[in-house]
Amino acid sequence: MKNNFNLHHFLVLFTSALLIGLFQHDFIDKTYHSFLEKNPNLLKFRFTVNDTNFSKGRMGNIQEINLKDLVKFHGHACDGLILGALGLKEGLQVLYPDGIIDRTNNRVVSKSSPCLTDAAIYITGARYQYNTFYVNDNLDGLYIIQRMDNHKAVSVSLKEGVKPAEITRLGLLADQNKLAPCELDKLRELEDNFGNQLLNSDPSKIFIIQELDNFIWNPLLDNKFIKTDILNKNVVTCK
Ligand SMILES: [Zn+2]
Image (tube, rainbow, N blue to C red; front, side, top):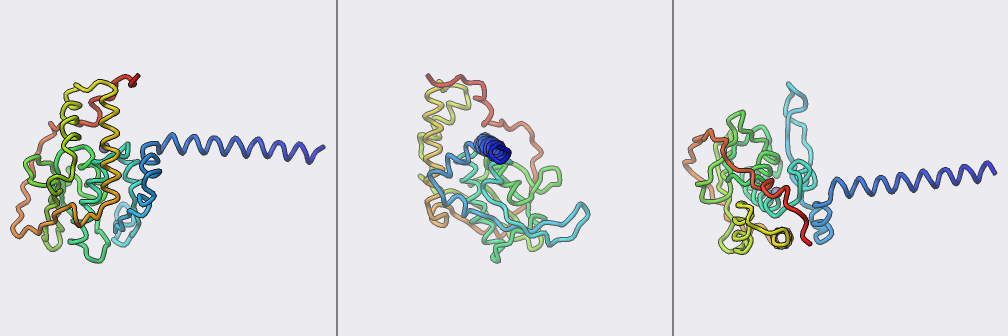
């Protein structure tokens, strides 16, 4: 009898732990997992970065970060985050041919999209408050990344026609809160498909990475950009 009770007890605990684990996993990573279901390759997408090893530390804390880490930092998986991460990877490969990104050694100019800016600060270590990051919507491309030790700089642009025009059109309407709940869901579907398309493409064929000979760091102190990924946060469910 005692053994039966223990086994029963164990099974109840085990099942509860499993259910709680599954629930938490899904709860935390819903948008990431919806991309992962369609794209197991998402797991292979990684950056090797070099940081200092404590608050006053030396270089050498080499670690790996992946898209899941980036999604948790940003708040959701989305096409813009994937676009930014892929473009940064291409640009940083030119600046760091050994594939190890020194996150103490970069400064970045970015377009103002909340997804692009989050990808840039997380992956490169550049920060506005330390004069290593600023935003400029007049950039030709998505980013300019500069290595501070050798001043080498590259611009990162997406080739014309890669991003579906319908996403841009509906996105502009969403920014003005002009999309009905079901149209908003349609936009999400288009963006998810574009994100998946990006993950399945060869980044060297969709981005233009250009070395800039005379890049001038000219920071703009501006905090009036609009965080477009929270504008529709109270829209009701599509019925
Ligand atoms: Zn986003």
